Image 1: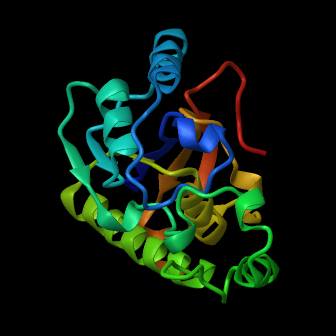
Image 2: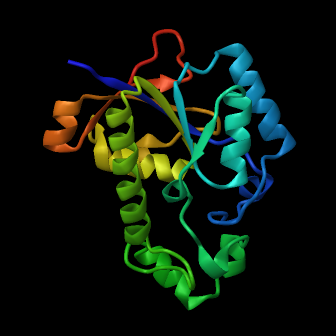
Length: 210
């Protein structure tokens, strides 16, 4: 039976994240160090070939695509955007420490959104619905290999919901420029809405998901 391979790759590094600030919907660009790192990873390991590239809509994802897959057309997908932190965008935890709303959010971010932002539940619903549409597009178009270049939070959410082996979202953490390879089997997807995660990306000798 036909199966489809999908690569999840986290975008390159940005300065704001390195400074410990909440950056979700803010359209931050890759840092120079982030660009160099992606090029080094590509030269050292090589990213796997993909017929179709799906990207988050923000600059750091699109710029990462242009480095990782320079000759490919990029399809931006709005649902692949990172969680919005609303009024807290660009602020650090220390700057928000005295805010009662921030303390409430830390206690239950799934149900409590930042002011003007998304709750964890809202974010997961948006991301998962968007991912289901991507899988449908891959299968209906007969695309054998595809890549999703997006944010770490987006990848962690998708794999915690749809990935096999089953694991909490923190188990799917990855560094900038790295990610996971998954297999979509139509019968398994139609029956159970799951995908099989079988390796890390870029491929390294003897690497595997256990």
